[in-house]
Length: 221
Ligand SMILES: *Cc1c(COP(=O)(O)O)cnc(C)c1O
Image 1 (tube, rainbow, N blue to C red):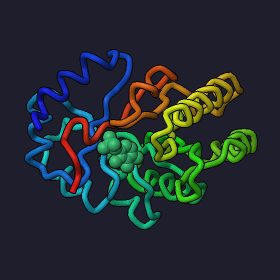
Image 2: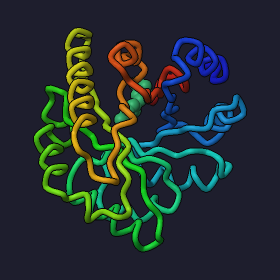
Image 3: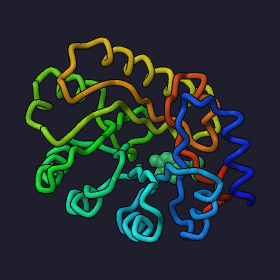
Image 4: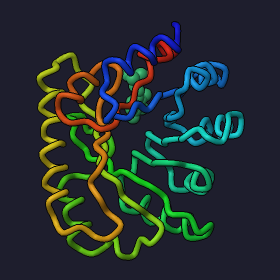
């Protein structure tokens, strides 16, 4: 796997308006360093236990993104440095991120994860839950949270029409939320969708952030 070439090739295909989050989970620091040396700065991890030591091992200008389901008791370890949490999937996680952000006086940038897949085991808010959160005024209590948009994970399937339908649906919902009267700490700028196998579809359906692992670093073992 030539990590540098993979990044250069992806950057040719993916328009500059779309950010590439290089998903480095399970890969060692040396591999991340190769991507860093090729000029890449945005990396995504899905486990706090793995993210924290990698943050410590790499230069401070790396933008670390959390993309995986989190336990509330782990939030405190990442709030000092995390650039964006894509996987805010429930109310008590919002409460905990706000609480930990308050403790160190740092506003934490978040995306709300929306459950768009057919699978039950995937995490995320329903569309109604997000509308309810916005309309209830709940966000006015979260002084240490800034919401920048939405994230979605499509169903794990070879049926690309299914995947497209889910991405399209998320984009429609994103536009709907964007057109609402939003709390001061919520904007709809970023739509995080698409991985190695489906980013081309996600781009066609309006993604502004793709999360790409194996197409950069190779298969995970
Ligand atoms: C692992 C992971 C990715 C990247 O998956 P690839 O198929 O390797 O590109 C993207 N998003 C999330 C949430 C992940 O856990």
